[in-house]
Length: 112
Image (cartoon, rainbow, N blue to C red; front, side, top):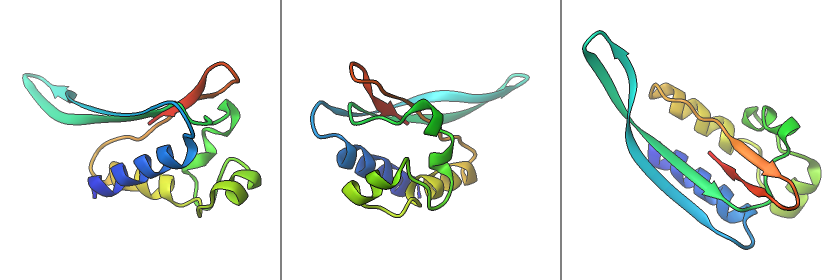
């Protein structure tokens, strides 16, 4: 299931990045600590220099059948289900999925 999430995030990065880079990284992290016990997990980051997501649209991209705007759907395709399903899968494994993104002219791209 996690590979499905990674493939979706990479697919989106490829779809929305015409030039620049796409970077995937991972590291072990402490998810929570209870007394002397630590629960470890993995943080996976997919970062790109694509078109970015406007700040006011970032909350809606995880909702079903939602995309930033209709011109994105016409130009790039997609159903608006990938990020919603990815977030559900990550949460089912006890994790979180969030985005940091900018769509400014000088600084654009996304990081999931």
